[in-house]
Image (cartoon, rainbow, N blue to C red; front, side, top):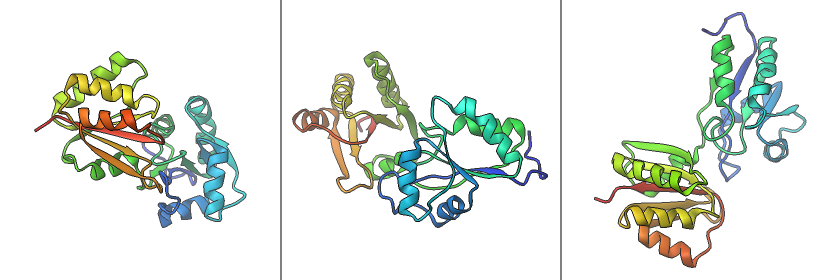
Length: 231
């Protein structure tokens, strides 16, 4: 359904910093200041971001993985009644391994106006920083906790000939690198950690080399794993 021109309200997806709080656009700040309410993944976490940028006292409503389907109709109704509602996640672009997809679907189905602002994304930041080919890539979201599914996802990425990008937990990255090394020890591998933060690091090498590093250096922080078939 096409958005109705008679509706004065709207829903706006606003990317937020993935680490460094200065990585937010002027337009994003303008929208957050002017919004009637802000839907956020974690109200306490987002409250800190808003306070840092001098945006206190905004009505906040939680919108996370477990309540998005239930809360979307209320947000749609508020927008159709004239409210401007900003939607943010804890970090990066809403909808990318974060809440937002179901709300956008609800906007499309109901003809409710919505906008998507450009901004920070750990996926693109890690891709460029890895030095791996950028002309074709695939993002697989969070790798499964099940080793068999991780093996399948990694094998598929290597077989594709494209750069594969995944989010991974620091508690599982060594296990995942072991699986990757079993598949192909020469696979080009990059572990990007704590992007845009003080202790940002990129560890590049073959799967076997990167595994050896993290077997002797306990990984911490948020991790993006990138893989590419060897030349």
